[in-house]
Length: 98
Image (cartoon, rainbow, N blue to C red; front, side, top):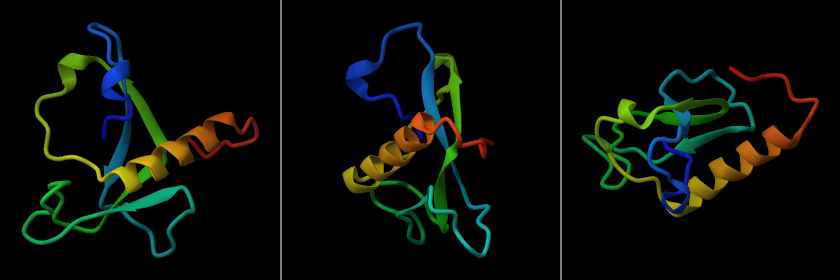
């Protein structure tokens, strides 16, 4: 999922993304945010399986790697994801980055 807000996107600059995955352990880590899904596809997110945004799995990618949009994250979940990322990034002692 793209973390960079539309207003902060600049042509040619890397885009920050967070991994959304269906690889979920029995106990969720506090910084893994469950995201909306439904079968056959969620009307906003486009997801059809239980998934989490792993806020400790962040990358910067070039714009050319983005092929298409599968959906949008509802504002509440988007804000939770951003909040967790900000908290982890500002914690000098956090070392569980993937």
